[in-house]
Structures are given as C-alpha cells and as structure tokens.
Image 1 (tube, rainbow, N blue to C red):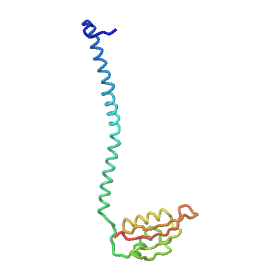
Image 2 (cartoon, rainbow, N blue to C red):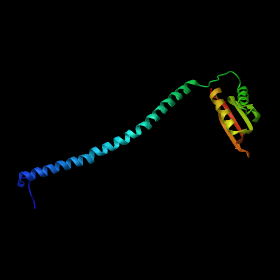
Image 3 (tube, rainbow, N blue to C red):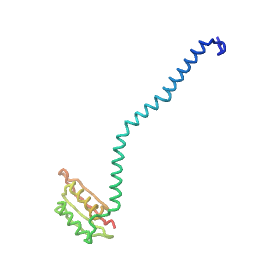
Image 4 (cartoon, rainbow, N blue to C red):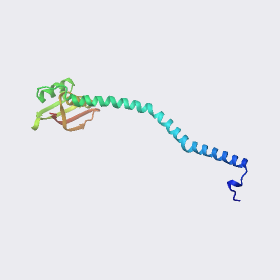
Length: 159
C-alpha cells in the first residue's frame, strides 16, 4: 500500500501536484485571506461611528481646556451674601431662602424651604460657574408636593 513518489508515472505526479496545489490555495484562502477580509470589513463598518465619537471627543477636549483656563466668570468683590441674594432673585428662589449666614473660613450656610428642585439645581450651577461659590455640604429633603424640596447647604468660595 505504500507508494513512493518515484513509483508514480508522469500523469499521476502531475495530477497529485495539481491537487496539492489546489489544496494549498484553498487552505491558504480559508486560513489567511478570508479571516483577514472578514475583520477588515468589520473594522470598516466601525469607522464612521468612531469618527463621530472622535469629533465629539475633540470638541469636548477643547471645551474642557477652555473651562480649565476660564475660572469663575463673574469675578467680583461683592460679599458671598450679596452674591447669593442677587443670584437667588435672578433664579426665582429668593422666596425659598429662609436663612443665610456666614460661617468660618469664608463659608456660607444657607437654609431653603419649599424650593423647586430644578430651580435649586440651576441656581447652584450658576453659583459655581459664574461666581466661584461651590457647594461644600448639602442636605436635600423631599416634600409631599412633586419636585419641591427643603435644602440645607454650606457653600465655599473656590479661591
């Protein structure tokens, strides 16, 4: 049953060589080229999404760099108590201010009752972004009416 290459006639050698060559080409295709093409196609489909993500990240990076260098917008010499009162009137939360008092180390303690939560959050964002007064401590209690809270907070200047 053992046949050597030398025992084959010319036509059998040619047929066997052709079959081995075809087998090598088919195996090469399915083991090398097909996986490469499949992965290449998959990666090409991901590019548009990644390009959009990259554009968003570049824009966000510029915004972060801008905000890092900007600092508080409304640098003012007014006292924190005046700033709090003025901003509270601007954001329509002044009626909820029940008590505002200075504390140690430039901190200010604030008590608010029956304030609309979203208005409180907008006011706090303004205090931080425009005036450099950041929340140091906060306690928010939900009330029976939807969206209404009582809040006790301590704010501190960022300088």
